[in-house]
Every structure is written in structure tokens, then in C-alpha cells.
Length: 542
Image (tube, rainbow, N blue to C red; front, side):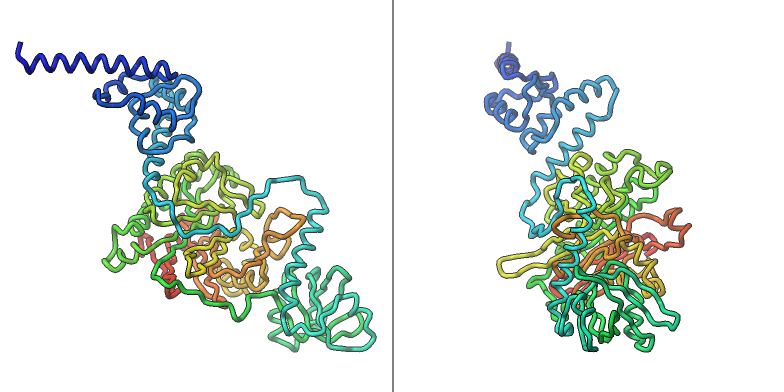
């Protein structure tokens, strides 16, 4: 027998003994090992160290089967959020060709492996995210809700220098002499007289009074015609008994001296909305073109350089098409399972470079209540999304501060999906007459002026609160971003950048029926150093 052959036999014998030792060691530690796992061993592994690593990564008190699939990921990712009992069950069914769940577990492990190398430092601070538990609501909640809204608006309006001689309504009603007075009130009624004047009924905690806007004051009448029920306004005018003749109308509004912030360095933010993954009309090819661009893999050299400087990506709701959103929706879905819709969305997000912070809020198609404020996306449905370390999931609405450093205060971003937009596009004359659904910029200016995301009671479903109204815009943002209406828009109002995201869905049968004309695959790109906005187009015809 040659020396080489003798050495080979000796090594084989030692390896067999080593493998027996490994099997016995893991059995003593409540772990079974599969043949494919044993086949991976080369005799140099430190068994104790492997066991310690497994115990650190896998939390299971029952016997656990170690196979090659698991061992591949053990040293690469934090697998502590895996349900190992379900993993074992799915593996057994997989071996009998009875389920695809095992493959889903492996996909999730693969996602975690990719995320583990992602940077965790992003310049994102979540300033406001709704997280209150649901509780029983009564009449008193609605009473307090509107009282708190009124107080918030009153504080904003009281600082306006135009509102001189500010009085409660009861004091105005008691005045005998005509005088210049100012009041703040909530709109309870609006009607046109037979002579063409506009009467607005205002109320505060002390009483109610009529305000007349003369048809001869055309500019004021034009503004007054856009007033909606339940909004809070200020009036400066002349009293005469139980009526005030308006001279000036005032809203809480954005201060005229709002600063236009600019970043000291050249970085970019992009804004998306209404991805609608799971719909048969989802424009996946175009969305992949966007991902390819933001990854710096396509476009001119200048475009690729710009893509490398993208640090922030905001997605304003309706990330999936949902299930059961409207009757017969199942016929319009390419992915009928809500878990699979969110898993596919996570797969797409995982393709985006990890240095980009992605902020996601829900919309009315997502799997949670429609009533606003909407809480964050479900951890149950969206586990693959939560596994991505560069993704920040917030409520709807939410306020997020991006790019804050020790020397720069950052940009406040107000995220709101825009469910209330439908009401104002159809009910406010100036918006309806200038394009309605195609004029998100007018809707957003309208809401900013009133410092409320849904001032009219009927404009959205909402959850009343005893201590505050979560839809009040208490912080004036640098960016107000939205979506919902599938029509891209970019504008500026008093140094607030208004961006309504595009969509990634073809025109649906419903949109065709009601005459909506969506603008899919358009991506607003903001240079945070100059605040210049460009709209990139990824549609097949653009």
C-alpha cells in the first residue's frame, strides 16, 4: 500500500470519527443534524463554537433539525425572528411536495443576509408617528376632538396682526354700537342670499353669529366661496346686531417668513406613491427601470452620478393593491394573497441600494383601517419589509426629518397619502374648475392654508381624540408629500415644496369609467442643496 493511499484512509477514518462526534455533540444539545449538513463538515470546524453560534441565532427549546440550508445563513444573518417550529413543519411538508412555505422561509433568510451588511446610519428622524392603541369611542370623543381642533387653530390665528380687537362671539352679540371687531369661529353653515351675498355661520365656545360677505367685494367673495364646513377662520369686519359685515377673511395659513432651507451638501431625495404591487395593472417593468436607475446602472454618466447622490426615498402609501378593497377586486389581482403582495414589495425594495433611506407610509389600499390617522403597516403582513434595515415605516400622516446633522437642522417632511383629496377635488369650486383631480397642487395649497389635512367632517373617515386632532398641521413642513390621485404634481407654496407622487399602475377600468387620467411612472427628484425639482419619466412612451 502506498504512503499516499494510507494517508487518505487515515484522513477518512478521522473525518468519520469527527462526524460521529459532531452528531453526538448536537444530540446532547437538543439538535438533530441532517446528512447534507454532515456532508459540509471538513474536520476543521470547532464544534463548540458552531453550537454557541447556533444557540445565539436560533431560539428554540425543542429538538431542532440542522440542515445545509440553515447552516448557510447561520454565520451571515440574525435569524432570531424566524418561527422555527413553523420552519420545521414547512421543511417536512416540503420534502413531501405538499407546501411552498419552506421556500418562503429561505427567501426571508436570504433577505436578512442581504440586509445584514447594510449601513444602519441614515439621517432620518421620525418626528411624529401615530401609535395609539384603538379604544372605544363615544360622543364625548367627537366633542373634545372638535374643541381641541378649534383651540389649535385659534392659537395660530390669534397671532395674526390683522385680527385687532379680537372678541368671543358672545361679546360681539352684546355690543350696542357698530364697531370694527374680529372673531375666530368654526364654519357651521354657508348659504347665498337672494341678492347674491354670501352668509357664513360661525361658532365658538361662547355662541354663533352670521357673517356677510358682500357680492361687491369680488376677490373676497371668490375666496369665501371655497370655504368648507368645519374649518376654522378669522373674520375682521363691522358688527351690526347679530351680523358682521366682513372686511377681511383670514386662515391659519403658513407664515410669510417661512425659511427656504437648503442643504450644505449636494444630496437628492426622490418621491413615489401608489405602487400597487399585486394588481394586474402594476407596471413592474417600469418600476424595475426606476430601480435600475436609482442603483446607478443606467442612464447617461451625469444621470448615474446624480443617482449615486440619492440618499432618501419616500413612498406615500398604497404600496400594494390590497385584497377586498372593492367588490370584485380579486379579478383584477395578479397576486391574490396579501402576504405575498407585501413580500413582493419587499423583494423590490431590497433591490434598492442600502445607503438610501426608504420611508413608507400606508394608504387606503394597504391592509389596515381606512380611518385616519392610519397606524404603521402590520408587522404580521409586512415582516419582510420590516426585515430591511434601510426601510422606515411610519403612520399616515407622519412627520419625518431628513438630513439632520450637527450643523444643519434638516428638512421636515409631512407625509400624507391623500385620502381626503377626493372630496376637495369635487367640492371646492376653484379646484374643480381648474382641473380637479389633475390639480393636486391646488388641493395641497388649500389644506396648508387651513393647516389641516381634512378640515371638512365629511372629507375623510377619522378617529376622534379627546386631547388633540391628529390631522391638524401643527408643524409647518419644508416638504408636503402625498399621493392617492395617481397624478404627479410639483409646486411651491410659501417656501413649502408640494409634491404629489405619481403611480405605478395603468389606467384601471374604474378610472376609465369616472374619467380619471393617471400619470404613471413619474418620479420627482429634489436636489436638497438647491431645492430644484426635476420629474424623471420611466414610462414606456417617455
